[in-house]
Amino acid sequence: MGKAGASNFTFHIESDMPEGGPKALIKMIKDAGMKASIVVKPKTPIEEVFPYLDDIHHVLIMTVEPGFSGQEFMKDMMPKVKKLREKAPDMNIQVDGGLSPKTIDTAAEVGANVIVAASAIFGSDDRKGVIDTLRAGVDKHICSKRIKANV
Image 1 (tube, rainbow, N blue to C red):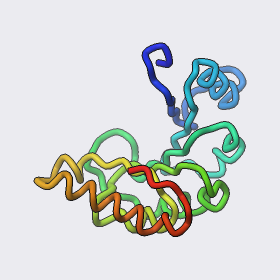
Image 2 (image 1 turned 90 degrees about the horizontal axis):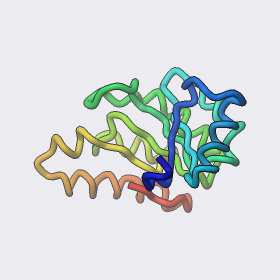
Image 3 (image 1 turned 90 degrees about the vertical axis):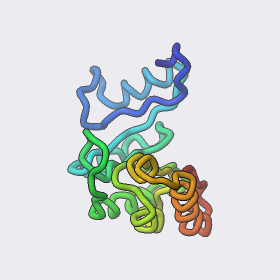
């Protein structure tokens, strides 16, 4: 992937790992010239990524079960976002799944600053308006905390 021009490689912490586990995989990713990032599925405790925070670029917290678009946002994932924001105040925290103008405040107020939205955008007749609303929601909540917005 690095040879193809990818600058970041994000892997599920729950995946099968090479010998040496996540540390070895992070090293392989970095040796290939990319930034390493970790995805956490809903049933995985956020503490599982804590040993790797100094070595990764961002954490993606799934707010739905991975697999298909259009699922309902899982608000009960927000304590993970909050706990990670407290542990890593300058880290990019990405959320993916069910993000929309109705859920953006819930995610951003606890520290999510990178938003993945598909159904909300592509299912709308006003895609720009949805994107603007998502960006404004992040800006409203995190700019006061001096966290960079990435929408």
